[in-house]
Length: 240
Figure 1 (cartoon, helix red, strand yellow):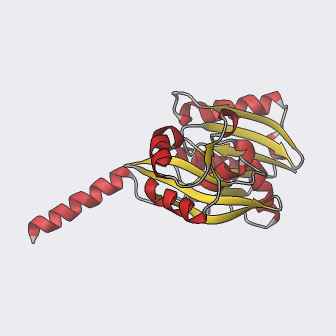
Figure 2 (tube, helix red, strand yellow):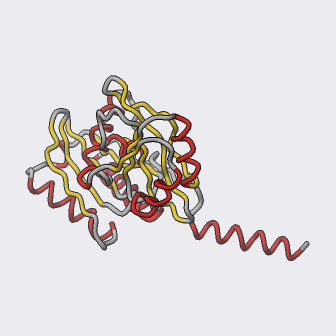
């Protein structure tokens, strides 16, 4: 069995092809280019490198959100297009779960944080129990202080990762009350390999959908939607 995995939910663009016991190829870029420029060329490159016939792919795993609205839409459009063209199922993998899975096997609580702006983060809390990823606190968008308070209540050592770390590092240091650390550079961002690994587990549990059914999970409104809602609210207030 082979899975094609995509992640464009944040600053990183990542593509992987994996079998059940091997990561055949992974291409990850964290640089100043939009995912619309990088994702398909990256996919073409690894498909060519491993001489893969795309019809041999059994399913397409994609980070389903939360994350960047534009990035999620690009990833979803790519996965849906491939799924429709190849008649393959889609495996939607929660973004924060996939990020946490990059630290497989740690004894610490895992706290991924992705920058959601306005001092908020996309986050959750996880642990590994008998080599299984267990969700302590489901993925959500909250103020950074709220997730730090949750961690303090656990009383347990915690490791942070994600693109929100450089932004929130000082805040974490000033507020946290437990022992903590930050994941090293080769493990601290999204990786399509992690999406593929979780994708196999989801596939075996029957957690798949058709390309037509797949939709990203945003968790909150986009900036444009928030601004529109605010304009409508002000308009109604002025009328009254």
